[in-house]
Image (cartoon, rainbow, N blue to C red):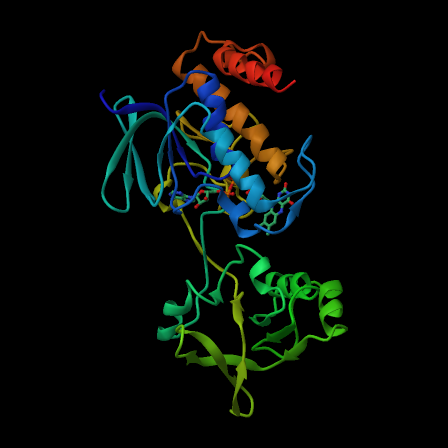
Length: 348
Ligand SMILES: Cc1cc2nc3c(=O)[nH]c(=O)nc-3n(C[C@H](O)[C@H](O)[C@H](O)COP(=O)(O)OP(=O)(O)OC[C@H]3O[C@@H](n4cnc5c(N)ncnc54)[C@H](O)[C@@H]3O)c2cc1C
């Protein structure tokens, strides 16, 4: 069938991207479908955090790591559809028809589900005017901490992520203010103590009621705060506002009704270490896949990806090898190796 891929990977996070790399290595025609505008998955939620626990990888910030996995995922030029949400999958004769939320259809002989914990969107403020500051000084995710150097930063939220940001920004910001709707911070105790012992100010029982705009550049100049107990309102001058109220998790799997789920949480796919799910032709890798001995880490996502792709290959070509030749001896890299070597010796 024209336009039918050997494998379609749903989710462009670490598991999906490494699956795309590995399926290229195994000469499998590949498409990735990702809901977010950018590839990288959950790693994009922690761009400034240092990742230490990936084998052979010295500590690296999430942003750089995301770039690296995207670059590697693109090695064999898979087709990539971003801003595309998969809504439904059905088996039609000997292939799958994947329907997106826009109504588009994608066809594939096999599928690798690499959709992590589903679609993650930060919870936004329920204030109409908030949207217009999002590209300016209102942040739901922190893409770069440099912008907060010597600035007054108000952080709304009292959970792990909010307090994590407060602690992370303490050494560089001019002033940190934490506002939280509850009476006590609910983050990890050690981090709560750090913030409480610092010169950050913490306002409990407090929520954001509105903003006062800076007329010159249409950024937020002041945040209007309300004490939820007394009703008292006051405003606070700021340079930046970070809202960390958690995430809306959109369950991706309503359409995957036929795939058996892990009984313990009724959410993740129950499978095996070869990436097989209960549905023939649908494989899985990364956080979405559950099996005994599973590692819910980046290292585990990569491991799963290799197994899922090997299973795809064997499903498509039952006589193919169970595993691929190691990369150092794999013909797939012949041309690239030659050009890399050439450049290496040029530099010597
Ligand atoms: C704050 C934080 C810090 C972490 N730190 C570390 C660490 O230091 N070391 C470590 O090893 N691990 C860490 N992890 C865990 C690690 O990030 C995950 O294990 C890893 O991202 C899992 O990769 P994945 O590809 O399975 O899923 P994800 O990264 O979640 O990617 C899944 C992708 O699928 C997309 N998707 C979902 N549903 C659909 C749909 N219906 N249609 C289209 N696209 C869809 C999503 O948008 C997403 O991009 C951390 C996690 C968090 C949250």
